[in-house]
Image 1 (cartoon, protein in one colour):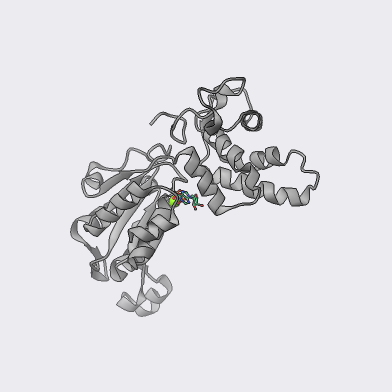
Image 2: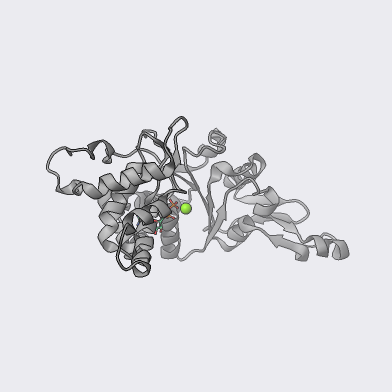
Amino acid sequence: MVAAATAALVGRQRDIEVVAAALAAGRSVLLEGPPGTGKTTLLRALATGAGVGLVLVEGNAELSPGRLVGHHDPSRLLSEGYRDETFVAGPLLEAMTAGSLLYVEELNRVPEETLNVLLGVLSERRAQVPRFGEVVAAPTFRLVAAMNPFDAVGTGRITPALYDRTCRVAVGYQSEQEERAIVARVDTGASDLIDVAVRAVRTTRHHPDLRTGSSVRGAIDIVAVAGALRAIRPDGRDVGLDAALTALSGRVTVREGSARSVEEVIAEIWESVSAAPPEDDQPGKATGPAHRLLPEGDRTATGRHL
Ligand SMILES: Nc1ncnc2c1ncn2[C@@H]1O[C@H](COP(=O)(O)OP(=O)(O)O)[C@@H](O)[C@H]1O
Ligand SMILES: [Mg+2]
C-alpha cells in the first residue's frame, strides 16, 4: 500500500505513512491543505496499492443527502412504487457496499444535512435509508475527506463532532525542489522553463498585491502551454510570459484595494523570476531588484501565514 504511493508521488513520505496507518487502523481521515498539494494523488495511489476502489465525490452546495446516499428513480416510482429495484445507489452506498474508499473533496462546501449523514455513517458504519432499509458498510469501507482550511466558502462549519470522529493530517506545500520534480514528472513541454515557472507560482503565494496564489498546477500549465506555444510561434518571442499570463491570470486573484491588474502583477513576477538566478544557486540571501519578490517560505494559497 505504502510502496505504491511512494512510487506515485514526489516526496510526501511522512504523509503517505500516516494516512496509510490511519486507514489500516480502520480510521477515517480528514486531509487539510491547499489545492494542488497532492491530496487526490496520494489517496488514489493508496487505494490502488491496497487493492480497494476509490469513489470520488466533489463536495459542493448541490450535494444533497439524496445525491450522496441514493434515491428512488422518479419515473419508475410512478409505475412501480417504492421497491428496492427502483433505488439508485449514490456514491456513499456504492462505497459502503463495495468496501471502497469514499473520497469527498471540498468537504467544507457540503450542506449541513449531508454532513450529518456522513457523521451518522462514521459513528455507526451503517446507514438507514428511508424506504430502502439499512445498509451496512463492508469492512474495508473508509471515508476520507479533504478540505482547504482557508477556503472562503463555508469554512468553520465543520463541526467538532466530525473532527472527533476522524484523524486529521495537515498537508502543506511541497518544497521548491519537490515542486520542480512534480512539474518535470507531469509535463515536460518547455522543460527549460520548469525552474522559472515554479518560482513564479511560489511567488504568487505571498505577493503583496495578491489575495490568492497558484498551486503547482499553475506551474504545470505554464510549462505545457509554453511548449505548445513554441511550436506555434517559431521565433519564441514572449513565450514564457504569455504562457504565464495564460496559465496564472485565472488562478490568482488581486487583493481588494490594489490598483493593479492581475496581468500587471503576473508580468512583474515573471520578469523578476526570469531575471533572478535560481534560489538554490545563491549562497546567501538574494540581492538585487528581484529580492522583494522571491519566495520566502510557505504561506497558504490565500497569502496568509500558516
Ligand atoms: N507530491 C506529488 N507527487 C506527484 N505529483 C503531484 C504531487 N503533488 C501534486 N502533484 C500533481 O499536481 C497536480 C495536483 O495534485 P492533486 O493530487 O490533484 O492535488 P489536490 O488533490 O491536493 O488538489 C496533479 O497533476 C498531480 O499529479
Ligand atoms: Mg484534489
